[in-house]
Image 1 (cartoon, rainbow, N blue to C red):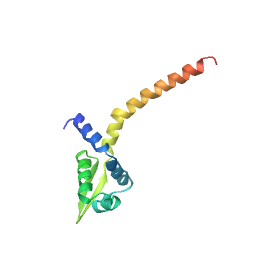
Image 2 (tube, one colour):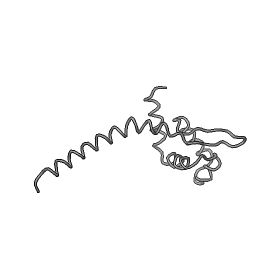
Image 3 (cartoon, helix red, strand yellow):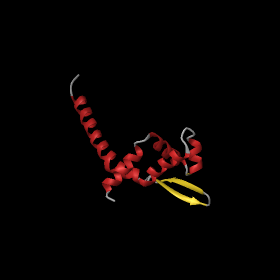
Image 4 (cartoon, rainbow, N blue to C red):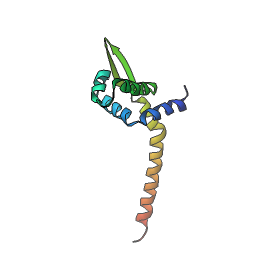
Length: 110
C-alpha cells in the first residue's frame, strides 16, 4: 500500500471523535475490547468493534489476543509520520512568518 493511501486511512480514522477518544484511552494504557465497551456505554459492542477495525486498518491500534481477551495497544508511529510529513512542515513555516511579522513590528517606530 502506498504512503498516500496509508495517510488517507490515518486521516479517516482520526476524523471521528469516538475513535480519537478510544486512542486517548489507549495512550494511557492498553485496554481489552470489553473495557473499551464499558468506557463507551452509549455505543453497543458492535459499534466499538467497527471503530477498532478502522483504527486497526490505519495501523493505529495493534490487537493482541491473550486467552479469551483481546488487548488493544496504541501504535503512535503513524501519528508521528503524519506529524513529520504535514504538521511540522506547516508549523515551521507559520513560525517563520510570525517571527518576520514580529521583527517588522518591532522595527517600526510607534
